[in-house]
Image (cartoon, rainbow, N blue to C red; front, top):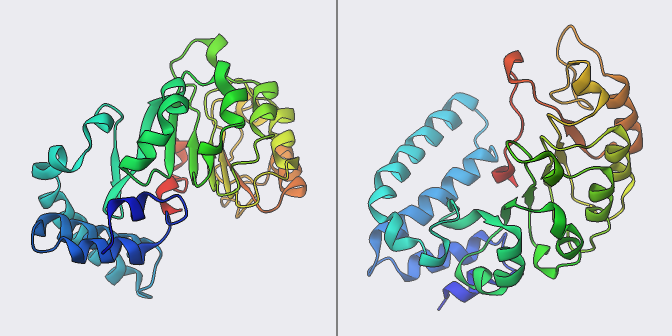
Length: 268
């Protein structure tokens, strides 16, 4: 019989079959949780686009999301471990995968947290002074998205190029697909250092809006700086340099007023 410990095993984080088997095993004693897990698994599959007609896929996704929203609110307290209730927990594929947490608390209690739920997405607070410890932590294994957001924090608490270089030395971010370093003090050189790092083989998106890059300073366009360019615009000099340095990463500098949207970390 599949247990929660099988799901939280860091080797099984991407395994939907284990989550499905767990749902089946609890169907009789907890039909709401059974339905919730299956619905979220189906919603994730639809996000990946298995249905070719986009209109049918979108309609199906909306129906599933409505069903999820009808089950979830009355069960949130029961399904959320007490230890995670203050960490803005978000359920994905039937279980909490996304949390917001103080960096020091994460480093000290990651082992216990990982036993509670299959965490794959981290939004960290008060991170700058602890970046060396964070970069050297094995608890980053299996993390698909990491958010170091500097919005509305003191300038001295924002990361700069040297801090980003420290993070880039980590040997434990092999699974990282999305890195959000928006609203910090990173310059063009910091992004280039990151682009040259060999420690992020699966990194696909880097979000860096609100930093000290030339593109931000000149208000240049840059939703997807290194991918398809919006009609009427061309790649900025920084965008072209980043693309040439690491063509596997899309460097995202979203300007919402242009009606663009950036990829969601939960897609990974």
